[in-house]
Image (cartoon, rainbow, N blue to C red; front, side, top):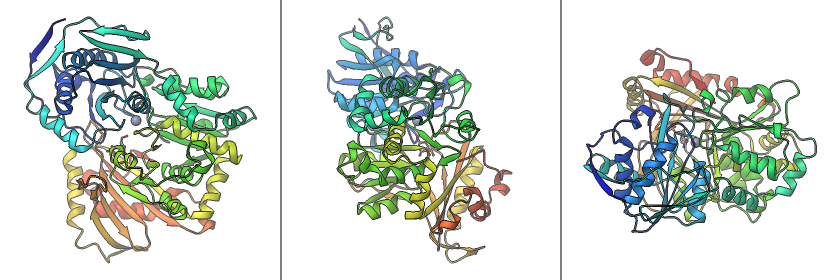
Length: 543
Ligand code: G1P
Ligand code: ZN
C-alpha cells in the first residue's frame, strides 16, 4: 500500500486546552485539520518503529471517520499495532485501562467529553502517554508548537476497515486489533470492588437508576450492572449510545441530567441515582431527594475506602484540584495521609499517582478516580458508592449527614457564566488581579479578605511550574471564592465562580447551599464587577 506525503498548511488554533483539542465538528472537518494535529502528535511523541497505540472514542459524530484516518496515518508513521475499541468506541477510563493493561506506547482518545455532539456539536482529540494518563503540558505544548509549523503529513492509501467486527486486520504492514470495548474494563472493576456484596444489595429491594445520557457508558453499565451484578434492566436509562447523545448535553449535573434528577426527587424515588458523561469519566451521585456534591463525594470515598477490597490496605494520599472543596483534606488529616492541591485538569494527578503518593483523586467538576487508571472514572465512582452502601446499609442522605457531623460541612457551589464575550471575561480576570493589592484586610459584610493570589503549582515530582491557574480570594474565616476561565469551552468564554464556606455547626447542615452562600455570591459579583462588565448576574449553570 502506498504511503502518501501530503502537503499542508498549519492552522494557528490547535492549542490543547484543559483536556486535549476541542473544537466544533465543522472545524475538524476543514481540510487537513485533523490530519495536521495527528501528525503533530506523532512527530512530538516520536514512538519507536513498530510501537503499539491504543485508539478509541466516545462514539460521537465524526468518531468513525476520524478513527479510519488515524489508523491510516498510524500505519504510515511506522506504528506496528493499534488496539482499537469495537466500532471505534472506548470510554476514556477504558482507554486508560487498555493502555496500561497492554502496555501500549500511548493512546489517542477522541472525545469532547460532556460537550454536545452531532454535526453542529463538538469533537475532540487528545493524546495519553504510556501510563494511561493525559499527556502533561510539556508534551501538549510541543504538539501545539509542531502544529504551527507543520508542512506535510503521512498517510497510507488503504480501504476503510470493518471496525464493528472483533478480530485482527492488516493495514499496510500494521496490525489493527479490534478489541471488546467493555471486557477489560469490566474485569478491572471486578478486581477492585466487592461484587458479591453489591449483588446482594441490588437484590434486596434497593432500587437504583443509572443514566448513561445516550453516551458511551451505556454498554459498560449494561455489562457490569445488569449482566454481572443482576440489577434489573430498568435500573438503566438512556443506555443506547447515540452519535448526537439524543441531542442532549451529556454532562451529569443538576441542570443537564434533569431527567434523572426529576426521578430522584419525585414520588416513590429510588434509593440511589447516578449519571455519567459523554466519554464516561464523570459521575453525578444522587440519593433519594438528595444531591451529593462531587467534593463531598471524594471525601466520602476516602473516608470509607477501607470497605472496598481494592483499597482495604489503605490509601497512600488524596489529591484534589484547587477549586475542589477542602472536605477531602479533613478526611486526609484524620487518616494521617497527605492531601495535594493541584491545578484543574486530570493531567496534574498523573505524576502523583505514578510516584505512589496518592491513591484517590477528585475534582469538583464531577470527576473522581483512583490509581487503577490514569483518568477520572464515572462507573468506578458509581461502583465505589454501591460498595459502600452495600456494607453500610444506610441511605445516601444519612451517610452524608453523619459524615458532616463528624468532619463538619464544606458548603460548596459553582456558578458558571457560559458564552461570555472573551474580552469581557479576560477583563474581569485582569480587574481581579489588579485589585489584589487593595483587598487584604477589607471587609465585605461579615467576611474579611485575608489574602488573594493567582494559583500557581510546582509539581512535587518533576518540578514543573504551572502559573495563572485561578484567582483565589481567601477570607479570614476560611471561606473562599475562586475565579477561573474554562479551558474546555469552544464558544466565547466561560467564567467559573467557585464558592466555599466551612460550617462546623450541625444545626446548620440542612441549609440549602445557595442560601448558605448567598452573601458570598453577592460579594463575588461585587468583586468581579460581573454585571457592569457583561450585563449578566445570573449564572447559566449552578452545580
Ligand atoms: C473542566 C473542569 C475540569 C475538568 C475538565 C475536563 O475544565 O472544570 O475540572 O478536568 O473540564 O473534564 P474547564 O472547562 O474548567 O477548564
Ligand atoms: Zn468526560
